[in-house]
Image (cartoon, rainbow, N blue to C red):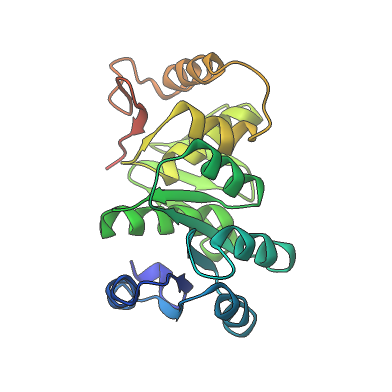
Length: 227
């Protein structure tokens, strides 16, 4: 995507072959990439490189990815995607509590990582793009407006945040837990059913009677299809 050319990505993993593979792929996509193989080097690289986004492996010798996330989030405006080799709820909660913006389970496809990087950049640095257009949807984060086929939708603040989150992650399956974490916050004490209520409302406002825009993926969550 040419609109993201010049965006800086810091890759941190103690496995050289993973770093080489991801560095090559992201460089070919037009990103500026710096790599580090341990936590201390990652902090140094972050201070020097000033990345827009950091991809952090959780398990590293010495300083782990959680501690790196905590330190860079204290001082830098950087989006963070955590990589973990196991799907543990405690790990995800810990990462989100420390400020991580997303997480992925190894092994993963490069295409999915790329989609999540795009999503986090659009969400974290909306002023880099002004209006974001995805298929028939136009999002203006400065005006807090979303339009569909040139029609501005009448959305509550929560509906706006939910629809934006689903749109920038279009094509990805989003669980109720992930939606609650990102839209309502990890410390939300209500019921998961609140997500279903808001999804129904969005479908009504989008005219999505057949659920072709916001699809229910049985047992997994929801997926928005815009292209």
